[in-house]
Image (cartoon, rainbow, N blue to C red):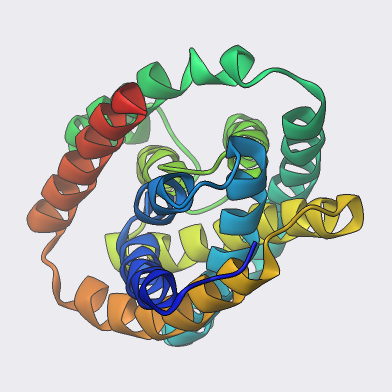
Length: 252
């Protein structure tokens, strides 16, 4: 369907906001997805279009965090495989299953992520006291990243919140470095899903390109913001965004 000048402007701004939020924490799709629905795109088309549109912003955010990733690539590569496989499975499920199957569990997952973020320091101390490996992906983390990748391939809103909760709880590292790792994993899942959607067809390419242009700029802005947030404020932002995601999803 053709895109009007007003819609083009709104999609660019929505992409900018989504790219910024995705790089800082996640849930940027809760800006762009409802906008696509409001412009009359069917839900599955809107979901596929949104995934392809925000993907360049995820890549932009990953590049912007390259300094924090410099010595993390070994564990990033070990984990991103699970994220990619999960993203592929999630995309196939989107095209095969009714939306209600996953829609019912999305809000509880996000609430759980917010709780994990809040109690993260306490959990880190408890797990660390029991001899938790420092900085190495465990089987629990790898399987959790896979599950989050499935969710990301299926819908993806608040995928970053879930990843930050998991990484912060199961890895011993500072939040900025974990955020950089989160961007790699989210890009892996979303990129894998995008391949499935492109092959399947049905993407509204005009809208996707406009969102992509905004999200690339937003990815760079988000990296600048993320580096300046103290850990306590970072956690607060994650929780606020996560709860806003729940409210928005319930309202959709």
